[in-house]
Amino acid sequence: MKLNDKYILEDLKKILTQGGEVSKLLDKSNKNFYGFGELYTSSIKNNQIRAWKKHKKMKSNLIVIKGTVKFVLIDNDFKHSISFVLGENKLQRLSLYEDVWFGFMGMSENDNTILNFASIEHDENEISRASFETHQDKFFLR
Image 1 (cartoon, rainbow, N blue to C red):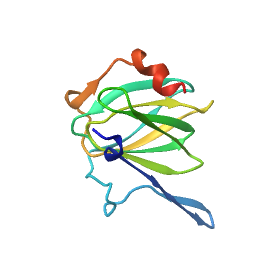
Image 2 (spheres, rainbow, N blue to C red):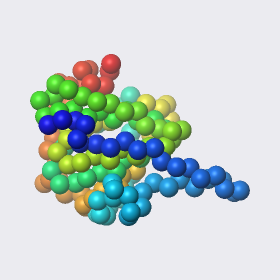
Image 3 (cartoon, helix red, strand yellow):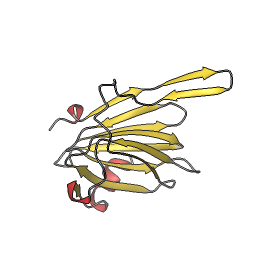
């Protein structure tokens, strides 16, 4: 499995208006719109890590709407990785395909909030999980 085939990172547009700004996050004509299953937010505290999980069916569109979050994607052998830091100051969307291990870490002192446009509703049976401790230092703390 090549990690480059498992994600797309895309800059998002902020449109300035007289009364503030509008951020266009995703629409149905975008190639990374995989259908709608659910929309949810997930918060994570500073220096906290949630890892590792892999969806068997769900495709995710992850956007950090508050704070800063480091995302790490790893291959099935836990040998190769790629990481991204997303934050509210540089609006981007990380689109993840199914069958990729990932985790994330809060990096802002205050709230860190991730928005996910998921292709299917949450189903615990389609998620694989791996031990966090054995891979924490290798991927998050460098």
